[in-house]
Length: 465
Image 1 (spheres, helix red, strand yellow):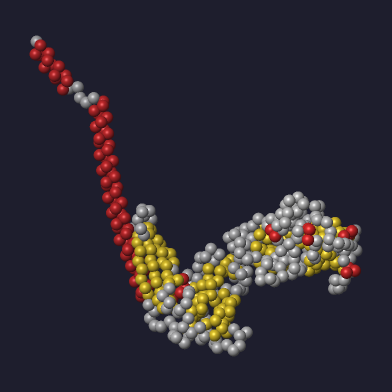
Image 2 (cartoon, rainbow, N blue to C red; image 1 turned 60 degrees about the vertical axis):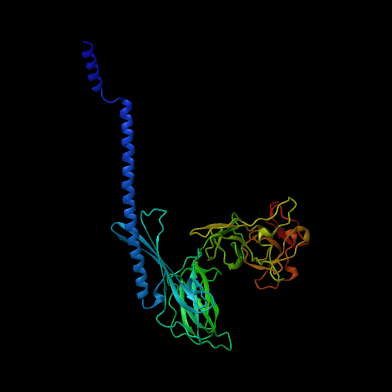
């Protein structure tokens, strides 16, 4: 009986199956194996796809090189980006070209010393879904012209045009003519007009007779302006035999920020008919005369400006910085009032105004009140007491205002910062005589202004009282 019970217990043990722990362990082992297999399959597919894409990219790069080598005129080989879709994969082909000159230097348009010799072409091909660690396929070649580009007796003019961001600007017309202001001048008229700039922003004038020329970039009405604030820039260029003359021009769509003058000024406030305005980017400041426009008691001014990304600090008056011992005019710039006033304050340049479409800004111009029966007002720069702390305007400014709309014998006049004396004339063309000076007793200054210097010199101060 005992033997029979033992056999029955053994049969029950064999029929009991796996425990829960054994099942979980088995499932974990299966999951690990599945993940490894799936990863291996995915990696294999990715490697296969990458290998196939790399092979296609190499063929596309080689194709671009072959096309460039077959181009009859290497001046037609330019930089650019194109896309091509093959078997559902989009490839981006980037072409970069440059010139190698006779001095052995490679650069955009072949700028530098020496004349143009060969052209370099670099092709880079990438594709959608490319692993970031995978390097794009590269191909390079050196292109030689079919014939000589120049000869030892002539030179080359190279024009390189870029935008404010430094990107190449294509399609810009270029003109060249003999500089008639130079005598004697060995230059001769160029027989073939230069092509507009290509996709690299380059235009070339080959086999130019040595001499002095004037090169013009752009055209009137194209809405662009140069970094020197010229709407159709022209530059004198001297051509030397066996050399390249390079003209680099930054040229971009002009910004036109609308500046509100003396915001909050009383209705009827008088502004100069020709108001000097200074626009100061991070580089050299630019001053020009503007014609204020008054609509519904709001006076504005607009000036086409090169779109420097830094924007512009803007203030009324013609700023002339110190340079070479020449006369200067610093007082119109609030930032030049560095000596603290009685309250311990110094002047600050206004925040920069942006150059994006629709940009606006304000130009502070304090307003004085003049009691006078005369109809014509003239403001002239003056020298204030040294104790006032005005940095001065040695170049001087004379601002003429239109006929006064004064009622009750009072005129409101907006002025740039600095020290001034005011003439009130009966007739527009009257001489500026001392008898026409407006006395301090007839002038009301903004609150907190420094005291008058003498009987008729006053200061418009940007420092807060």
